[in-house]
Length: 211
Image (tube, rainbow, N blue to C red; front, side, top):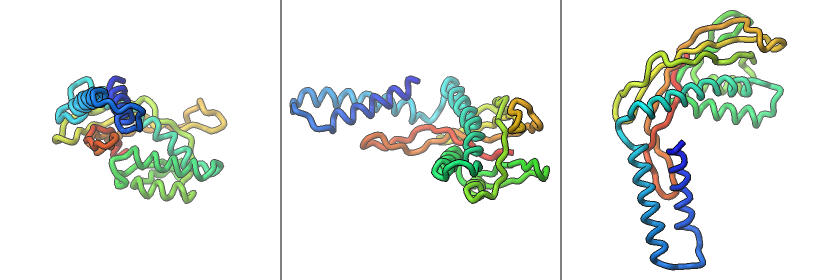
C-alpha cells in the first residue's frame, strides 16, 4: 500500500541523513533533508488527520477482519501444549497486541462442558500459557461488517464485526461440528509510533470485546 511505501521511504531517508558518509557536501545534505521533510509532512497529512474518509475507513475495516481471522490461529498456538513454549509466548504477545487493552472480554466455548467462559484478555493469555485452557480446533469465518466504523472523537473510531466461530473435529478438519455466530467490537485509534527521531500519532486497528 502507498502509505507503507511512504513510511519505508521516510525511514530510509533517516538512515541516509544520519549514517556516516564519505562526503560532506552541504548541498547534498540539504537536498536530502528537504526531501525527508517533504515525505514526513506527507505522512503526517495522511496519518495524523482527525477525520478519516471512506477509503481509509474501508481499509481499516479490512484490517480488522484480518486481525480477527489471525486471532483464531494465535489462540490455537498459545493453547497447544505440544509446541515449544517460546512459540506459545509469542502467540500470547500477538494476542495482547491485537486488542485495545488487556481488559477486553472474550467468550471461549468449552465444548466438553457445553458452557461459555468469558475471560478478560490478560487472564485468557495467563491461563493459556499455564495450560488451563482446553485446546480446541476452530476458525473465525464469514467475517462481515455489522456496524461500520463511526467517529467517536478526534482519536477514536469504532465499529462491530459479525462472524461465525466454526468448531471442527481434528480428525476431520473439514467437518464442522458446531457453529456459533458472534460479534466483535473493533476500534481505530491514534497511537504514538516512533519513526527514526520522530514520534508521530498514527491510526491503528485494535479489537475489543468478543461475544
